[in-house]
Image (cartoon, rainbow, N blue to C red; front, top):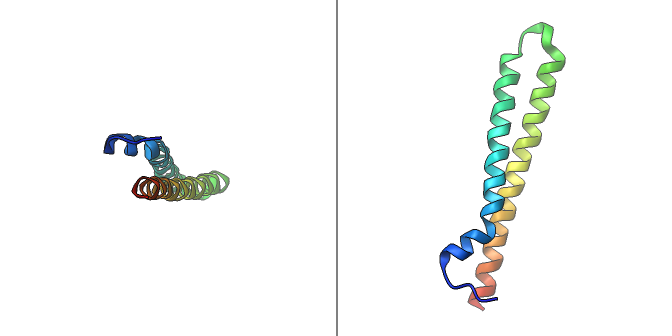
Length: 80
């Protein structure tokens, strides 16, 4: 495989970054709803939103790390 431009390199790992940004938005959404549901009557709802926020933030970090790893691997393969 011959990669001709920088745009082609970006397109190889851009899906990981786009999915990661979606996870970040979802995590922020659940954090906001968990904060909003902080009324004492909504304990289960608050825990639900906070646990989903933690899962989404972890997905964001994992996808960003995979994206960086793919970029590094492609860069290494192209340079060698």
